[in-house]
Structure formats: structure tokens, C-alpha cells
Image (tube, rainbow over all chains, first blue to last red; front, side, top):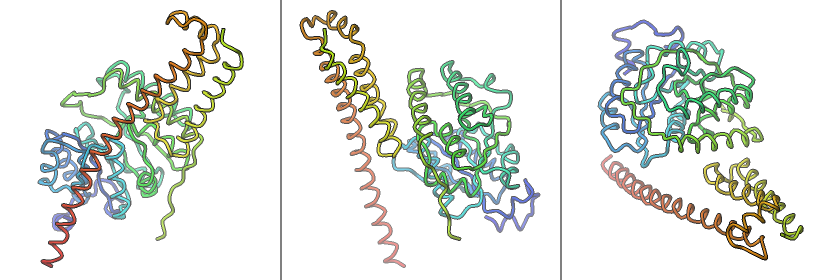
Length: 256
Length: 119
């Protein structure tokens, strides 16, 4: 794949990116309608970026479509949930020695063309985890009232815990440095992992940055999360946050 | 009325339960998902044990005369049943997943063996 790029040189999408071993993690569960486009957009953005689709127990053609488009497919034998799926991608990135990993959802709401905003701080060594947040806040983003309150509540709580303003703790649009990859490969939370991960990142002394990005409206609009489930997750994540404050975290050291 | 010593011991035991569960989560021996029901158990039992007049009232509602702490036992028992039932569902899921893993491993080994033989 890299040879093709040399034959027809394209402009580097972000200065300094070409020298790095880079990959995209795309968690996908039953996203046959959108995963192909996500991969195509990533390839168009940067042909030298390896795309790894983590198929989290799909029952549709997600894995087949992803493989046809040239992505590496990690097929989980059963559904692990978003945290377990994303961590599979980070483990792959860690073991294969990637310098930087970006993460986009398989439903197509994250635009590959917005990646330079996320990558720049990582490439420049200013941040280990860069999170793309919705432009203009949550207002234009359709979701249940409970979920909106939850997002705001966690943004407020996490901001206080990490001592840095965080506006969106649920965004799965991220760029992560090698150190961040090493941390997430060994230790990544489960459902709604981004909230806890933000606190974890701060506790180990990695630098997190938020950048505003434009996102696409979800095509499907099938938010499977009911109000009761939202409350359950809120209590669970809150408990995890609380206990996490008393936990010791460390970025694993690499011997190379 | 509930004997004072029963209230005190009940409250201490419930708070101990909560603390043990929190410590188990902190040291990653218990996942949040499986701890919530235990914590709820601890909080409800601690409340009922410490709130003596409340326990009396509830005992009156459910027709327990004479010995209100019986309500404490009943509630505790109910929660233990709920936790056990929850664990049964968890174990069922784990054993299903275990079967899938074993099958996938067998297929993978076979594929690998065939590849080594042809190589």
C-alpha cells in the first residue's frame, strides 16, 4: 500500500505525518451501511494510514465490506462493547509499533477531513490524546434529554477532576500518541470509556487537548440507549470515576 | 422497637460491606458492573438499620408485629436472591462465550496446522 503512495506522490495531509507509522482504529458493530465509506474517506485522506476495523460481533456484512475495501479487520468472536472493541485496536497499535493512532466511529459521523486538527497537536508533541468535540456544543446533536443532561453533567464533573475544561466526554473522535497507545493498550475502561479515560489520562500525567470539529449527522439515527439505560450508565460511570480517584495508574515503560 | 444493639450491628455490617466492595473495585478485583447491586444492598440495609423509626413503620406496613428486625432479614434475603439471580445470568453468558472461544481456538489451530504442513 505504501508503494502506491510513492508512485503517485500526494501532498502530506499534515506536516510531519508521513514520517510516522500511523493507523486508524474504527470500531464497528453492524455498520455495513457506513463502514465502507469511512474506510474510503480515510484512504482518500491519507493512503499511508493503515485502517483497522474492529468488528464487535456484527451479524451483518461489516467485516466483509471492510476487508474488501482494504482494511485490516479484527473480528471479535462476540460483542465486547465499545470499550473492549476500541482497546483491541489500541493493543494492535501497540504490538505493531504504531507511533500515532486515530479513532473514528464506524457509523460515519466522524469526518476524515477533520483529522489534521486532531493530528497536529500529537505530531507537534503538544498532546498525547486529542479529542474532537462537536462544533457549537451539544445543541445540534440529536439525543435524548437524559443523555444530554448526562453529557453536560460528566463534562462538568470531569473538568473539575482533571482541572482542565472538558466540554464533551463522550466523543470517540480522537488522535493518540505512542504513550497514549501504550496506556490504553494495557488499561481501558468499559462502557462509555471516554469519560473514565479522560480522568485516567490526566492522572498518569499525559496531556489531553480538545479541538472543535464538525461532525456529520448520524445517518441511521438509531441510538439504542434508552433513558433507563442512560441512568444506569451514569451511576456506573460515576462510581468508576469516584473509585478511579483512589486508584494508581501508570503508563507502561517500553524498552526500545 | 428494634433493640439498639441490632441497629448498631446492622449498620456497621452494611457499611463494612460497602467499604469492602469499594476496595475490591479499586484494586480491580471487582468490576463496577457487578458491584452496583452489592452497593445498593449495602446502602439499603444500612439505611434500614440506622433509621429505626422507619424500620418500625415499614414493619407495620408489611404486617410484622413484635420484631421489626425481621424486615431487615427479609430485605437482605431479597437482595441476596437478586444478586444470585444476576450472577446466574452472568455465568450463563460467560459459559456461552467460553464455548465460542474454544470453538474458534480449535478452528484456528486446525488452520495453522494445515498451513504448517503445506509450507
